[in-house]
Each structure stands twice: as C-alpha cells, then as structure tokens.
Length: 433
Image (cartoon, rainbow, N blue to C red; front, side):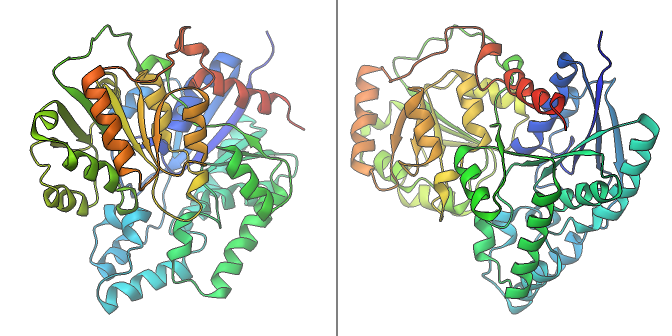
C-alpha cells in the first residue's frame, strides 16, 4: 500500500465552535483517511465563537491528532467599546452595525483599521510556531489554511516563506477583500489597500487555491489572475437517515433552520402569509430554528403572524437535520445585499441532503437560484414576489404537491455529498507540485 499523504489543516473554527463554516473541514478531515490521506489539525486554544455546538465534537475521530495554540483575542475589549457581548462582536452581521453611541462607532473604527485582515490576527504568531513544531515532528509536506478568518492564511504565508518546498493550499470559504460586510466598514484607504495587498501576497505564494462557487471563482479572478479550484460545501450522507414520513394533509409544514440577519428577513414571505384568509392560515405551520435578528419578531408581530410561527433557538446540527427531514418545505433566504448573486449558503446543501423541497427567496440570477432550478429542488422567488408567493402557497395547501426531483441513488454518491467532495480535495493533494 502506498505511504499515506500527511496534511496539516490550519483552521480557527473547530469544535466546540458551531455553525456551517466549521463543518466543512470537520467533514473533510473525517473522510480524507478513506483516500489514504492522514490529516492533522491545528486550531485555536481560546477562540471566541459566535456559535457553540458541543455535539460536533462527536464528529471528530479519536485517532485524529488535533493541536491547539493560544491567541490574543481583542473581542472582549471591542465588546466593551461597542456594548456588545463577545459572541455578538465575533459575528460580522452584528459586530459591524454602525448605529449607536460615539463610543460604539469608535470601537468599530478601531476594529476596521487596526486589525487587518481581521481581529484574529493575534493568533498568527502562536499558530505559526506551533505549526513549525508539528511539521518538523511528523514530517508534513502539505498544509491547508481555511478562512475566514483570513488571518489564518497569513500563517500559511509565513510557513511557505520559511519552507519553500511546502505545498500550501488556501481554502477560501468567502471572498477576502470583496466580502460583503467590508463595504460597510469605516475603513481608511490605507487600511483597504493593506488588506488587498495581504490577499494578493497570499494568492501569489499559495500553490493551490480553493473557492466554494463558480461566481466566487470569477470574483477572485478579478482580484488576482491565477487558477482556482471550485469545491462547494456539501452535506454528510451519514447525517440523514431514510424516512418514510408522509405529509400531514391538514397542515403545510414550512421550516427555516439557521441564523437570520436583518438583510435576510423574508419580508415577502411574511406579507404573503398575512394575505391568506383565516381558513388557509390554519393549514400552515411555520417553525424557525436558530438565531434571528431582533427585528424578525417585530415584523412578525406587525403582520399578526404570531399564531402561525413558532421560535426555537439554535439546536445541534444532527437535531437540525432531523427537523429538516420532517418539513414539507424548507425556507431559504439569501441576504438582500450587494453582490449577493455569488452567495451559496452552507445551509442549501443540508437542505439538499434532507431531500425536501426548497422555498427560495433571493436573487433570481444568483448561484443559489441557478442550483435549485438546475436540479429541480423547489421554488424560487425574488424579494418582491409577494403575490406570486402567496398564490403558490395557496396552491400547495390545496394540492399538496411541490416541484421536486429527489435523488434516487445512495446519498454518498450525490455530487454534493461530503464524501464526493473530499475525493476532489484528495485529488488536489495527490497532484502536488
């Protein structure tokens, strides 16, 4: 048997951190040994996470070597300045809200201009030293850095500079300088130029770069012209058990699973629900699982939808998958922001794994809408399609049929299964320079 390929994965987000971002490399690390690749993981010792999910620890093999190094975390100080908790300031959707006192605005300005590329920069020197030790002790010749946070890629840059023969792969889960919330940061020109300069240095030095969508591939090409591999997010076939649940003819169950920022509030969906008569409204059950912007309940109350919609907090990922599988429709909303056509949330792939129709609201020419249309995964609507949405909901309540093309083969063979996607990652590792 060929000698195993050893790879060090450097990632800030790792269990007990929760959310869809952490699952990408938890799952890759889970399946890489199937392709004769031995992964090692370096993560942070004292990280500040927007979400915590202890159940994800069960996804990590007891044989996987996981190393941790400390970090200087500025979020407690930043939280004191902005009046937010550590959890809130570590989440871009809440951290960069520029409303409030002068003190809060000063805190955001400091965050935007002194912590470049991001507030995880304090992890870099400690992680670099730890990575050196791991590489030396285990004879590792390949390193993967995954961001955000993009500070993680600076660790890769330092390692590549010191060890020129090291094969370094950048995994970009989001754009770097072009990510949507950068448009709202009060950055100086000097800070913006420094951020782009760091990004280009990394893209120049990295042997391979992975992005998560074709549109993001094009965005990155405009930043720096080089070859990029596209490997999407996906779902783990082992998270979904076959079910024979039949739809309740007396109620249409619609579920939303995940976080919801202010930009992702589905106004047209709420308006459509409010337009239905009482008899139809009684036949709809809407359940929200996750964390939601405080304005969500305010809008629901405004449309008097309290009796239709139930709230549930963040639930462990396996429990979330079960909730998905018991829905008739799964609500998916792309934030109404600039350049949102390239957004494909990790949630869409779990929805695919759940094998339930998707009710999509977002840009009709975006990657997510194209994916749903191409694979016949459900219904797509624009942000202002209130009347069309209401008409379709009425039809679904009465007919009980949704457009959907289920996957007839084993889920492990699905093009978006984590197993199949890991096969692509292993191909990059085996074709090292």
